[in-house]
Length: 259
Image 1: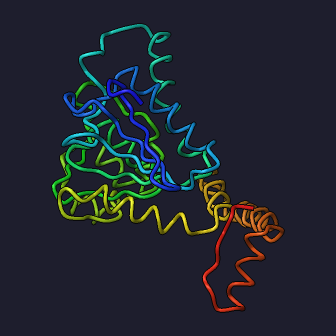
Image 2: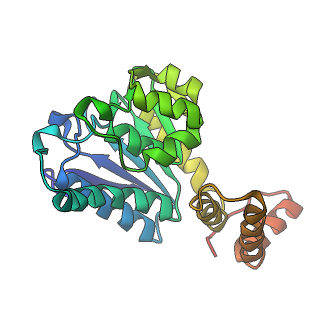
């Protein structure tokens, strides 16, 4: 992509690296970025050559939230368009078939923390700082945070973090479940790419079914059992399952093709 694009896309083998590219604005999300991010995520999910997505920010921040300089009081009708554009990227992450890893350095505030929480795995540098931050500008929150944050930290803690949006260190975030792993400053992307390689070796169809079940959100336990049956039924009749059994029997490493 051209250097002036607000989102950069690069393939590293079967991993697609998507980078928010407004470093001078700490990757704050304006309308152009949210559209380009959604397009990049949708493209990654539809690309047959891609197995895992890594999402990061250029410069010293992951994402400082929505770009306040582009916000003005406006009608609900206009706001719906803006908000739906932001939700489009989250829909791509949750509705897509491929795991998404967030590599977080520096700030992840407001919409930035929502974006990170929407991912399947969050790797954060030790100097990363996380905060919901929405109430600071009179907003409640969006980009899936009302689902993603409670699913990570529990409903009670999520309410406290949103009503009292203090700044959390990556280590504090790890203790709460907002972060899955902390790494030395400057190495979050390196670790995320390494994790992506490991995940890419897993059976793509099995990962797809995991994402499908997770996207159903909170369902009744008995209904969840039915979802698991549907997923297993689809997987048992695949080349990947046959390869897994054959490799296990032959005591060799399985090579999954996503078929």
